[in-house]
Image (cartoon, rainbow, N blue to C red):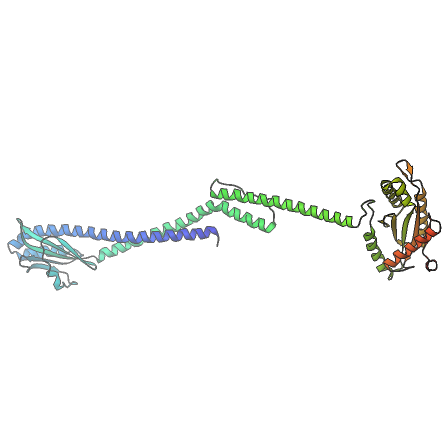
Length: 418
């Protein structure tokens, strides 16, 4: 159930209960007022009758008294009229055919006018006086049924009018409440939209400077803070992802030369060797070691040695393919992985070019670094399909190049290794 409907029902329930209570109290009060008003009129008429009939009682004129009583009894609401003398005996009376007077009606003694109500009947007593002396009394019984019917019709008309007014009030109240609560309903719709779309940049329009306006501003401020928090969280996640990528890159990168390291080489070797048994593709691993590098460090310093390693990496990188992987394993050792080569001749020609490139003078701080390069070549799947064995084969071939006089390359041979 919507808030407008709930508030309308609550307000209408309170208003209906109040109107029913007011209607009930008004009906009761109006009935007593109408009845007493009718009684006052009847009392006045009875007093006038007592004034007119007193001579008939004094002079014992029964016939005239009966005619006078019958004339009054001709009124449709009058059921009974009796004239008594001072002894309480009935001097004259009128009785409607449909009414039988009870015996207790004569038991009342009259010195002052008064009224007795009995259901829908009203009994009036009035003394009959002559020159200040009480000569008797008058008793009149009036039927209030017709007045009651008239009163009920009046109340029904009033009830219908109140019902119409209540219906109109309900419609107006619903419209007024919907108008008054429209900003709150808009705020509720916005909250549902934000929850569904997760768009925290939406804002509610501030219509009035009341409590709903304060709530709207607070909600907008909350959306603003959440939006800022979301932006900061996204920025933090992006930074963490970037840092994660950088850290992942650092794990597989040599910090000096920015070349891939041994971990990157091992990963690539596993990928190549795992597929080599099911494929005819040929790959080559070169194990590279610098000659006389210890002499450079000892005589020219480690800074010169670092610059030499960087220059070596740059020269080799300049003559290899984009798919080839050049790694620094540590110290003065490098590894070059050539995946998917057409023939061993291609790898050996490249090895020769690397030796030639490194033999060109490497000048660091105006000093030529006296280094050379020894390279060992091993192939997969020709030599082995195991990553570690392939690395060992290339390492053996490199030592064969060292034994052959350094500054050259050698291809792995099982006979030479044995």
